[in-house]
Length: 222
Image (cartoon, rainbow, N blue to C red; front, side):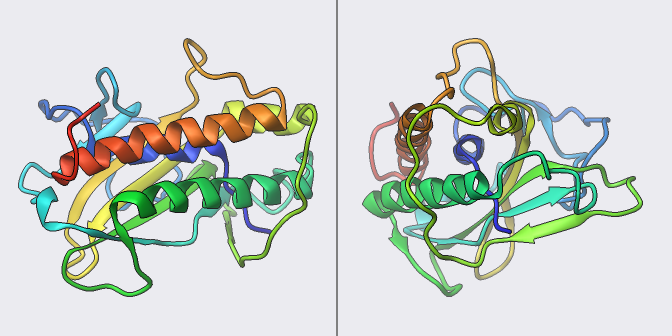
């Protein structure tokens, strides 16, 4: 079934902040990104691991093609403890928050072309070295609205999952930015209830999309 979660919003922050010297990252990876060796440790305001193309012309982009988010896990049974409906709620809530906020500064398109950024994101709880990897893809549709506290396994999933993503020129496939992030406990917004999940989605959508807009010359950086 399709899966997304609020922390995915952090990935868009890979296009913000200043560029520093590249440091190769050596650790267990999921295999979602093509090349992890380009990633460096992120600084203040950045995701945990980040790469930005110093030659990217951000101001030439005014449209976004957001690909369906995927979830990479180690085998089909590895997330059975998380209620399926909760995963669907996270997908739908995140999709609404990201698309709504991106739509304020960029045209949302379905096809590649000049001036289009392609954003590709995944939630990863997998290792490329595992013998079996299962990739879940979104198929659309709305999940039932939820209220009250999160299921304990859903909360643990949000806390533990790693988020990976990349931004490319949709016409040329040039890599513009890539990143890997995880939920930060210090200073992080609480996500113990569905209401807090919704607030966190809106907060991060506004924060990271504002910075993306600033990078593209659409507004002053926050």
